Length: 226
Image 1: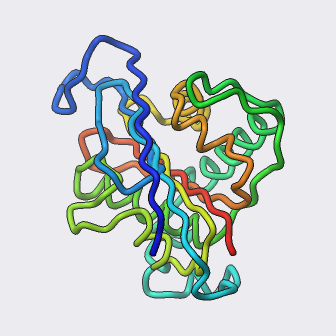
Image 2 (image 1 turned 120 degrees about the horizontal axis):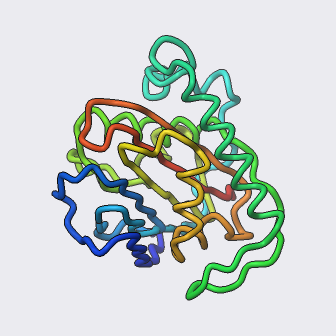
């Protein structure tokens, strides 16, 4: 059975705590467990991680993952045009720069320099699916309206057996820049701890612009395979 460890981290950049606020302020959130998620104007939400025992080993290669029915709709191309793939690559560069330098995540601890993450196609697929889903169905949560969690998405994307996985999300009218998204996550203790967690080895990012209220939606997936 998976072990889920819920963490709550909320960073307010303004004195407002209303997800239905129509001021257009940015919203950020993080997941490290499949618990309830807080959405707050100009805020960073709830990080979630899960660990599980091994059940399967190995993962498909990059090309085979993007050919699957689940991932093909978010493959690079007409359905996932520029600048989104480039934004996702920049997120990884920024995350690895933070990991290389070390970062103080305040209540979650002071993290020293650690190893870089590598982009994994299954985690990237899961991140893209969630960013697109949030933008299309106009919600902001780690659990989508169909009840799928980040664990479900990562497994459906073909990640296979994992030791630990996690997710961060962000969204906002003005978050059309990877530096803004990553800076917001690093400023929130739980999100920061996800980014700096030395146990993680693999990563995926999804960035998408859509008709949802927040316009720009971002997802980070973290993993360590068995």
